[in-house]
Length: 172
Image (cartoon, rainbow, N blue to C red; front, side, top):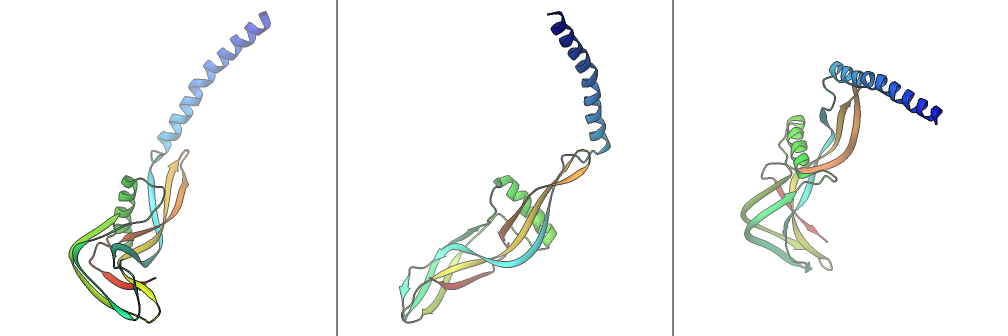
């Protein structure tokens, strides 16, 4: 019993001496590197891409001609997995500055859309509208103690360009 009490008392005394030193070291590290916790995004491998919008015709088996003509809203969303919508907004705002062209998490436009295409004999196709976009690799980093850069994740994102650039294509 006496030995157990002595060990417990010694343990408490030692932990009482070490705790302030450990707390002090952590405080000194964060004071030496005030950037700890800061997050940043970098963008690479930027290329032109096309995202399918919400506008598409019915299928037609050729030979024949498909005409899409409607007064409606075309909409498209960016693709990046595993992020919140708030984080995606930040990513695309920073990407716009970094890559020199405005992109966003979504894009929509109301208009009268009209397009016609010929479907070859024996093929079944429909018209699909595509929106100009930018595909890129996004790398999220964070500053961690003592003052190191840590890669949190690297993902591929495709975001619509904030312009009125569309194309229509026959798809299967």
